[in-house]
Length: 64
Image 1 (cartoon, rainbow, N blue to C red):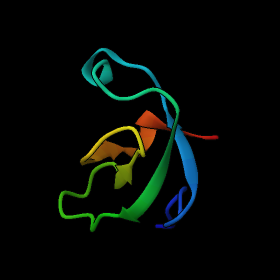
Image 2 (image 1 turned 180 degrees about the vertical axis):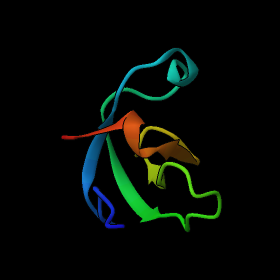
Image 3 (image 1 turned 90 degrees about the vertical axis):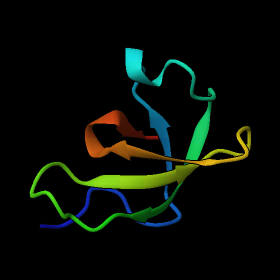
């Protein structure tokens, strides 16, 4: 299965209740994570506005 997003790509978060504390603006995809569960692909993303990375599902992202 191919990933919709690649490392280095700029994305935005789809606003959901569970992501309400996330910074606004663009995030950079750090890398796709290995699929251990057989479920939805997850990604490690980073914003310049936050000191930490986030792990989100593919459905939480959209192309910037």
